[in-house]
Picture 1 (cartoon, rainbow, N blue to C red):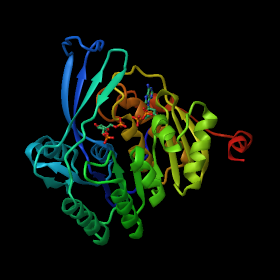
Picture 2: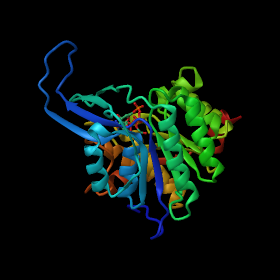
Picture 3: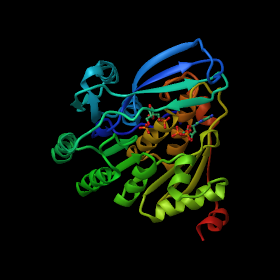
Picture 4: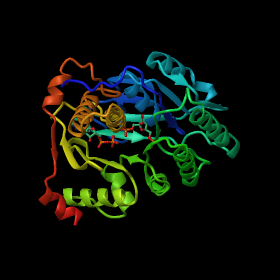
Length: 333
Ligand SMILES: Nc1ncnc2c1ncn2[C@@H]1O[C@H](COP(=O)(O)OP(=O)(O)O)[C@@H](O)[C@H]1O
Ligand SMILES: O=P(O)(O)OC[C@H]1O[C@](O)(COP(=O)(O)O)[C@@H](O)[C@@H]1O
């Protein structure tokens, strides 16, 4: 099957980017610290994890509302992007400018990220965001099927504020999927996030130990599951995805692709997994689709596109397997 599709009428998905960014993607042949570089291309794109996930979900046919904080001094690229994506803009505006994150990609596919801290958010602004989200949770016509929270916390807002937000959303009976790192990931897990998607580095930070082997990944995934996360997704770049949930322990391996820019692959994977879950796709199909779409994303700047002419080849070249009882017992015992 080349695509996952759901019911004709879907409730919206709400994505939250408390610290979005304009991504400045600069392609150079090879990066040499201290040297002058002539860029091969430069692109400025409205981004941040919640915005990227909205882009994926909207392209897959979900009504999407985006919220978080935007600086009013430079919100026009976001306004244009939201119009192009066809998503509803419920971002709280703050005085000042949204951060610019620099993504330096080299011809061999290596990317160096320089992420800025972002706009400071005070308690009053944070309460405005909470009120915006609460209004959506409690208005039947706006009530989301799920909330996706993505990215770092902005300066001024600690991990405990994120935990409080997750608790409020869950109290309204709406699932919360969270893609973040560091203290925010720890707080999100404790607050009961329904799904998380650390990459290997983020997983090692959460587990506070090295993660080197498949068994290390699966053990840490089990710990996240035991901590109450319903769907644990671990992404490992070209080595694929481990998914542990009520359906068991699954692994996928993306097809080999020519890597141009890996930024947005994680956001693509996470949003596409939510798509599969919301469409009640069979587990194997959901994981295959999300893995293939994330592999598609690394071939260019930006999120994965299911309308790529060879997407059905990427799907069929993605390997998905359920770990058999013996393998799983080794880790889960
Ligand atoms: N070099 C690659 N080749 C094929 N697929 C990739 C590659 N890098 C990433 N992906 C796909 O994108 C997913 C997310 O990438 P990853 O780098 O793990 O996440 P993040 O962007 O959050 O760090 C991977 O699990 C994989 O499916
Ligand atoms: O909020 P953080 O952790 O600084 O991350 C923000 C960055 O992550 C991105 O959303 C990309 O994330 P992924 O590569 O994990 O998909 C960028 O668009 C953005 O610049």
